[in-house]
Image (cartoon, rainbow, N blue to C red; front, side, top):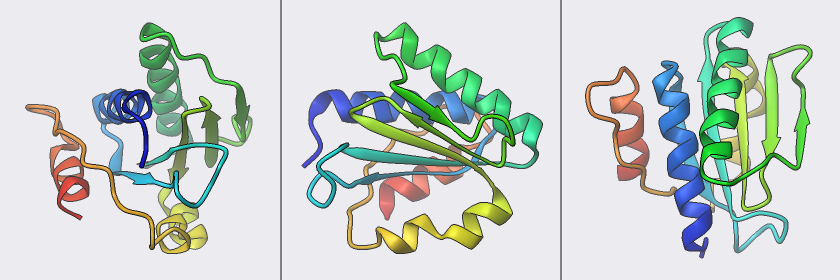
Amino acid sequence: MADARALQLAEEAARAADSIKATDIVALDVSSRLPLTDVFVLATGATERQVDAIVDAVEERLLGVGAKPRRREGRSGARWVLLDFGDIVVHVMRAEDREFYAIEKLWKDCPAVGLDPVAGSGGEAALAAAASA
């Protein structure tokens, strides 16, 4: 099971993505299957510009709680950006790439991490759905 720090970072990343109106925000506890990280956070952006904005918001929020990205990949194309914070890995993707790569299906045997909805935000439904999955 993911540790408390990973769960806190996942929550912060989800809130940051939600603040930029990311959709389909989901967190998966991959700790029992993947020794490199505890949680995957997935978020979808409608455009490359929105993907960039989501990535910036996530990095800023997590830096604010003392987490620095160890690695970033995909930033130049902004279709699928991966941010590795050690305890968590954040995937920010365009909708068509998320559908094509189907990360949720690849990791379907990993439990969803409950995320508290951010009051009054556009991504509230996606966060609530992830919590009930």
